[in-house]
Length: 198
Image 1 (cartoon, one colour):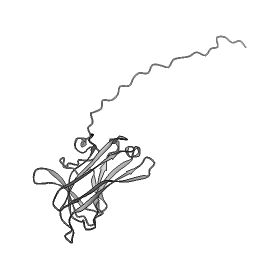
Image 2 (tube, rainbow, N blue to C red; image 1 turned 180 degrees about the horizontal axis):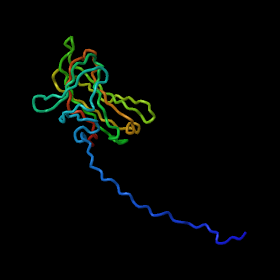
Image 3 (spheres, rainbow, N blue to C red; image 1 turned 30 degrees about the vertical axis):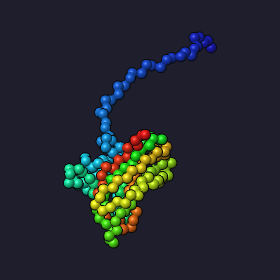
Image 4 (spheres, rainbow, N blue to C red; image 1 turned 135 degrees about the vertical axis):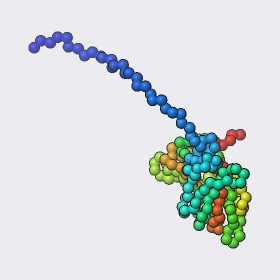
């Protein structure tokens, strides 16, 4: 057998032809300018209830005018005090180690059946961690009594952890702590935004 010109030569790969990227329409988070990391409009000025629901029970939500042209959310038909308001948040909005301010305005539209007045409220953060376990944290202590037909507001500053920033979902619940607190409620100016510095 005779052999000749046996070789193994390097052949450079062919130059790829670049594929043009599609032109994407600009996107805008529709509620970012008012409500921050809430998955909805916490000012209710856009007339939508998206992102707000019952955490238990079947009370009814509606958007009404407060008489001055300002839109607010009204909740009626609560039949137990533990029927919290559930607010859907956007975990992708959060940055690990950053501080955010949770804020809510609320007004009880009545008193307890025994004429009780001055209810206090509590908020809880609930999230599903990357390992599929659940996280719970009390984040709003509204210890100033909320009296019938009078606006109250409270806020809490929260530093976001790694598993919160990477959560599959996150909700903020808000409800009253007294068993007699079965009144209807108005809400406004619900937001989760970067906390002010200084």
